[in-house]
Length: 44
Image 1 (cartoon, rainbow, N blue to C red):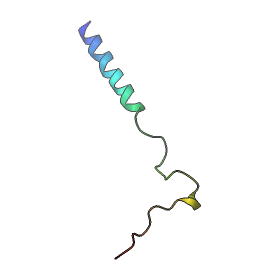
Image 2: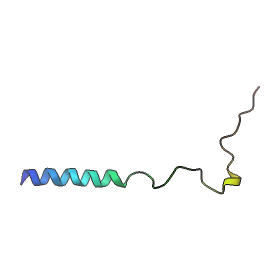
Image 3: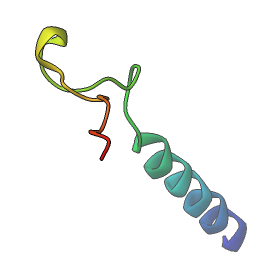
Image 4: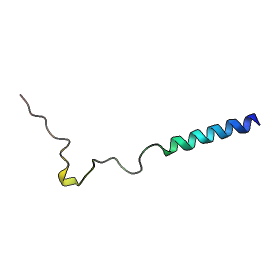
């Protein structure tokens, strides 16, 4: 019974961690022609 509870806890942890994150590649929000970052900082 204890082994079953341990396996269930590990399974629940794996499921919750696999739900974290984002599907697809990382990209800035909005249309590509309106994205202003990254841009050059003004030099003084």
